[in-house]
Length: 98
Image (cartoon, rainbow, N blue to C red; front, side):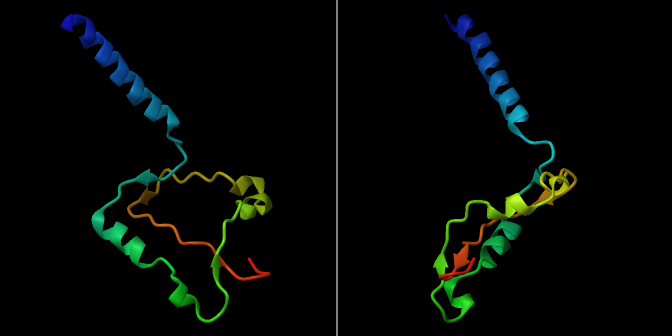
């Protein structure tokens, strides 16, 4: 019985590895996160206190900037870059502004 599951496990593992390889975009930067750069990325995120007075709110943007970019700028080749830390700023906005 165990002999039947051995090839099945190997085949499933190969399928998972292949699907991960195909899912990765070859134009995206390489990801090699490290603790120091990841901590630094989280420290430089904007907060409400950094914005000053006003009615600042976190907005949900619908990728509005993508529509105005020229076609040759939409998918640049970043494969030679290495991303070592990542954090996302909230999208702050005020009434009648973006």
